[in-house]
Image 1: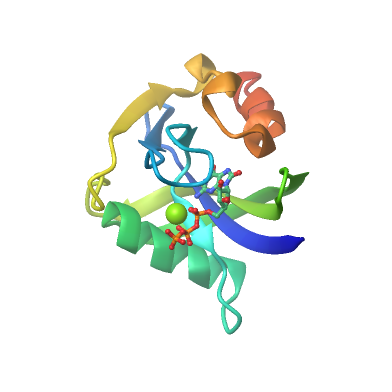
Image 2: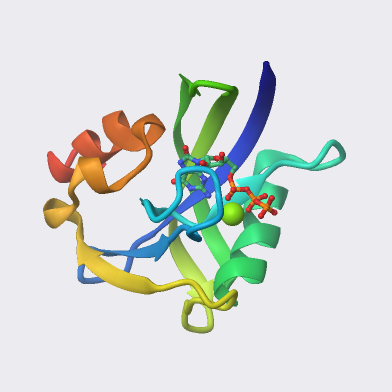
Length: 131
Ligand SMILES: Nc1nc2c([nH]c(=O)n2[C@@H]2O[C@H](COP(=O)(O)OP(=O)(O)OP(=O)(O)O)[C@@H](O)[C@H]2O)c(=O)[nH]1
Ligand SMILES: [Mg+2]
């Protein structure tokens, strides 16, 4: 089974709101809400991939990112390891640069079922205020 390493950014502002983007109707986990991010290329560290993907998908330049854990999940035909980073410093204002719908949501108001299953444990930690 294909196994992807994925860098994922939890972009959090001073009001403890988190930036979410909606996955495309044609993609894996179609229409689910997600944290911006994407595949780590062979010659990259997770943090380098995070910075590249957040620039590509949201237009921000990340200046402060802290690793907050990983999640391993096997979907029907795909295994993913998500490398989560809490992003609290950046230049610019995040937006749906690739045309994807976006919104800011209070950390405590996140709803696990709106995300891919690989995210559920992390959402629980965020809602509980453990991060
Ligand atoms: N970005 C992102 N991907 C996630 C999350 N949760 C999760 O299971 N994934 C899975 O991670 C895999 C890779 O992420 P991605 O589709 O964003 O990768 P990418 O930006 O490089 O995609 P691309 O092929 O369009 O360039 C997808 O199968 C996706 O379903 C999440 O919160 N954020
Ligand atoms: Mg992506």
